[in-house]
Length: 93
Image (cartoon, rainbow, N blue to C red; front, side):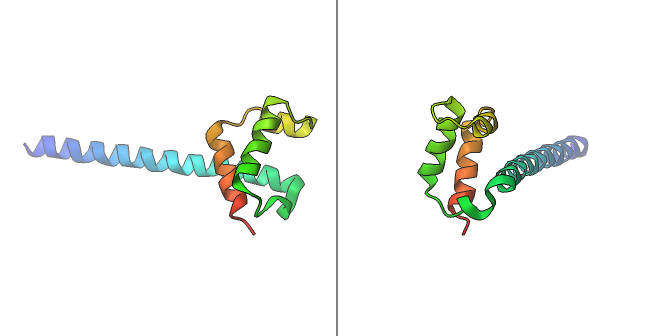
């Protein structure tokens, strides 16, 4: 019985560590994208409307808003990444 409890305990540590690593990895990915935005825009896009940022990035991703640099940057973004970027910049002063 002690061995089974030990196995479950060790497995829970492994799974919890994996979840923490995944969250850290996601935060690192968002930070990379934020830094990419900052390299051109600086603080200019801070405190913009959340929905405006989403619509803009989606338009660049689809190509319906024409800007070669932004089209290339937005094209690989997932819906979640766009939402996270919009959340970050809409709350940034």
